[in-house]
Length: 88
Image 1 (cartoon, rainbow, N blue to C red):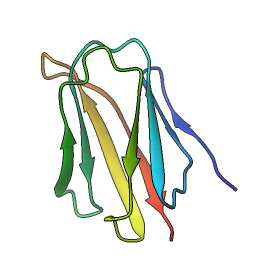
Image 2: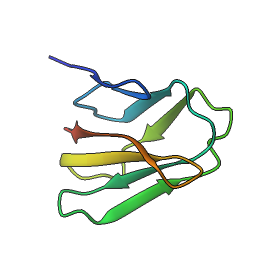
Image 3: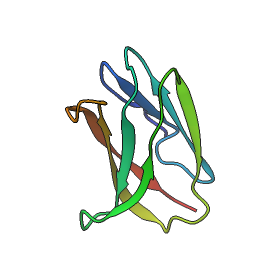
Image 4: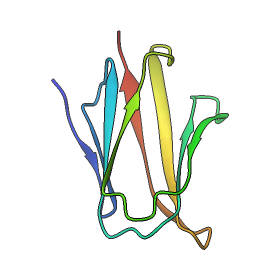
């Protein structure tokens, strides 16, 4: 069963994901999305999100497992974070 990881700023689905992970943003202006593996290593960064309300990430190059995301505002404030799972 899939569930949505959500807070006031970012929603992530499907979770667990197989091929594509969808991020939906609300009330955000600029900033960046960071993806971390389970060891805390930053494995992906997406900047220049000004004006975006959603983004799809191809997960084909991610191994099975748990990952974490963090949304950082343009003034370097942590706005949102959560986790997602990749299962193939």
